[in-house]
Image 1 (cartoon, rainbow over the protein chains, first blue to last red):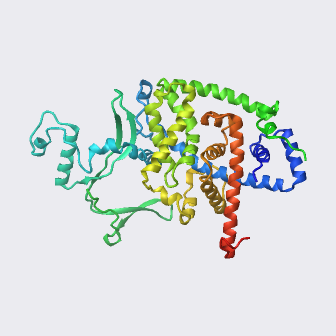
Image 2: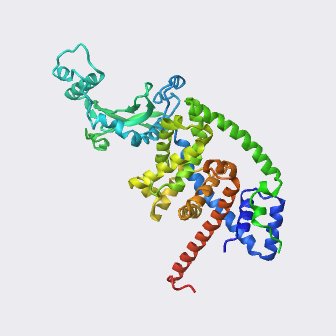
Image 3: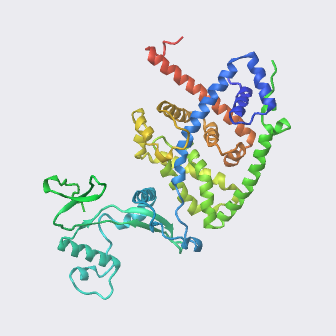
Amino acid sequence: MADTDLDILVSRVIDGRAGSSDWSALEARASADAGVWKELALAQRDHAVLTAAVRRETAKAEAVRLPRVATPAAAEIPPTFAFPKTVSVAARARSVGTWAGWAAAAAMALAFVGRGTVPMLGGSEGVRAGLTSQIESAADLFNRYLDTGKKAGTVVGETPDRKVIDVVPAADGHGYDIFYLRGVVEKQRVDNLYRFTTDETGQQAPVQLVPEQTPRKFRKPAV
Amino acid sequence: MQHQGVEDLAGPDQRGGLSDAAAAELAAADAARARADRIAEAAVCGDAHALNELWNSNRRWVAAILLAHKPRWADVEDLLQEVAMSMVRKVGEVRDPKAVRPWLRTVAINVAHAAARSGKRRESDERMGGAEGTEDAFEGRGRDHEAAPESLAEYEQGRLLMQLAEQLPDGYREPLLLKAIHDLSYREIGEILDLPETTIETRIARGRRQLRELAAAREREEEDRRLGLGSAGRV
């Protein structure tokens, strides 16, 4: 049966809010029913366990930052993707991972990019045909780099995924600026492969790999 | 039997005197609230730094509100990002800066309910869902784990209590989960939920009682199952 008085007394003890009158009341209840102490102990145990679980879950909040706001003050902040040189590669990857969560919210805005294609912003046919154009967009130049690289065999292609690293409300109030990473897979032929190992004196020494020992770690990406 | 009535126990304020700890808590809360009001006002007026500060000082309890309302499979981090996005876009529409906290709670509840309606299952389904994923989830606590080191049994017990808390009425579940974040006082919880402090105290007390009863019932079921008794096996 619910006993609100006792519940409140127990709750105050758990939360460290019990004053002397509360303790007196609790002791009076316990002198008549020793089970009160057991109730207190169980309630304290539940509270400790629940608190640990809630704190563990809500700790995730510390990783969630606001999208940057475009104000004069915010404009002075360096771009998110200009990582400090002291940050490790792993830390960079974690940072990108954190922002990658914005992908869901930014999915619609990113839809224009399409999968594996680059928007043609004018003059692209002329460029592809090898014609010179006085005004070339960045997209045209990027496409030309991809095409030329593929012909030369130095570019395999562009990776299909984009990693969203920042979303900023546009300064003019219309829409959002989305910052994202694009990846290009390049290829280069070398005569030999070496792996660095540590010899018995603790020095780094290159060891040449023979072809049959060379695992095919990298597959040609689907582009 | 010496017995104080509910009226006497309704709250420290109504007992006519405060313990030293309660008085100190009130004084600290007053100062914190005045500062929070100034930050909220600046944020509503478009100050980016204040907006960031507002988010940083409130995101933890917003996560607790999401926990109280989200479908089990939804990931708190994903939902928080949606709340953050809404906050940036709409905080300027809040008329009374002192009402920012209740407004933020409403945003969080709406986001959680929208996730429930969407019915989309996400990766977190496997992470927090069935019991078979418990050990992986335990191992994967990583940087999120701030509390004292737990055993797998304690971790599992915490997960179970969180699931049982889902069965509590909204009015009890929210204050109980908010109180589990140590740095929130009854008064602050009352401000978030727009309820008197005494009501918060009563709801937390009753919520704890109900959670204990649910846990006890669950323990009895487990015991019956171990002994091979069906539901009719217990007299």
